[in-house]
Image: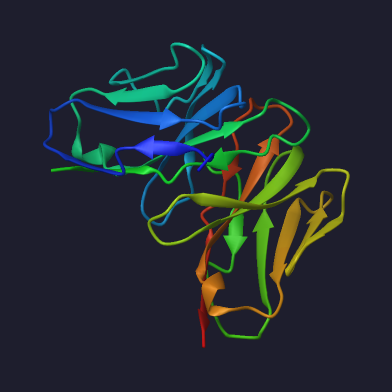
Length: 115
Length: 112
């Protein structure tokens, strides 16, 4: 399967714990995005990388959130001191680059439940 | 924040019928994209229409774009039970970064 993959698919944690998610984009894609989706809503943008550079961050990305893409390939999203409000589906997407098309391909998501 | 609204929020039809979903947005865009999401799963890209295009087809999908009204519609013809899913429009804004801005989606239920 050469699509976007995410691990883990599900994560249950207790409030206050740290969690880390991983995203492996489509191999030739240089752009990688993180979105968050809560029940009944569309995805909301969190952050974006071009290669290893984090170029854009949403105001939704509080100080407890950090994302990395160290070698311009896979990316990790860490949430520190999780809160119940962090419970959501975290989606990763990748694309070839900023063209007039910007077609983004999404992974299956990581569903986080904070107890 | 979310860019626009899909209409209706929910749609129930019989197999074989056509389903039409509408999307409105607020700002100038480079393109508009439609995605499908099955319950609890990731998003599947369906079709992209550029701001200088008015209509596009892909299989049983027909998308229109009216930039003067800042609206788009997605038509699924001859629907199947497997089309049951949530459908989202997403806009690539001219003045924003590369993030897609999603609406809240239309939940389509197709019964056999």
